[in-house]
Amino acid sequence: MHSFDNRVALWDEGQIALNQIKVYSLQLPELFFTEAGKKKIIVTLTFTPETRATRGDSYLGNRMAFHLFHSVKPQILREKYGIIANDVETIDVPDDLKPFEIDFFPGANTRKVGCHQKAWKLYQREPKNRPATPVSLVLLNLNQWIMDDTRMQDYCISVVFEHEKEIKLYNAIRTNIKTKIRVK
Image (cartoon, rainbow, N blue to C red; front, side, top):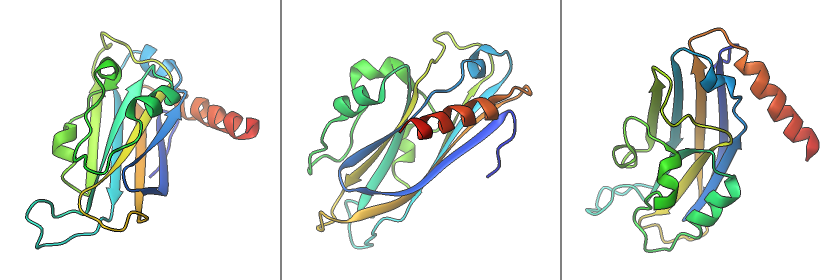
């Protein structure tokens, strides 16, 4: 994966416990949406779940999913999703967060059945409800039938922000990320 002035690729390789969420947040520069031109956001998630061919109800031992939100603080997302119960098979986006969700193609229901998920959002013109910062990615890991509650799931997630114009998106995001690291 490569970044350019007008294309930024961010990724994380990590682990997540069963029935847990992680929230990644970024102060996306306003110029990504205010500058005229086509814009694209691509999210890719891969993970290696336990599998069992004899399971009729679910081949995958756990399912992972992601949702991207704008204009909502990460702490609010953590509170809204809360703690995931052991018997939950799916988690829908809370109703009060739906107006802030960035809708991808393919949709969440199509993506969640696989362990390699890729989705994108293409803005060909100015959006009616222009997204604002922060832009936050919610990653969910739902247990299907794994008995070991301490099992950690390895995953890799990437997000690409791309603009057709030669804007200085990379430097703006890089500066923001470096500032956050220094402040901590």
